Length: 125
Image 1 (tube, rainbow, N blue to C red):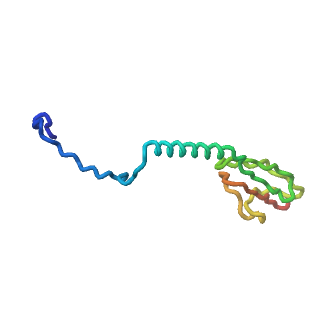
Image 2: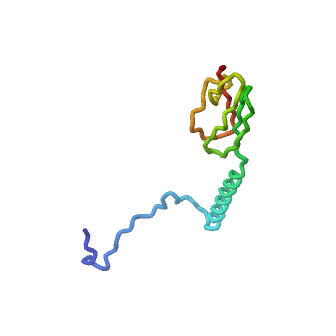
Image 3: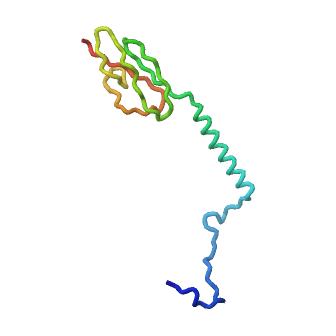
């Protein structure tokens, strides 16, 4: 450890040379920089406002001959809550599927990222 008290008082300390670093070629006034920051903050606030005003994403259900199922509206990344199962005379409901052929089932949890449609699967009794 260096003992600073025992060093001569008038000894000059070496200062590292200041080469300007990353901003050595940046020539901008404080006023211009302040305006750029204010505009950036306003832009971010505007995007957040308009993003929150999105009416959401519609998730619709094709019951494929079964009872009607109401569409649902979700916000981005909101977790899907499946509706009450539809009914169909002579069939047993097997679940909701990503495709009309009822081959690819929905795997919960699902986070809604856009409007989509799901299809009912049925098995004859």
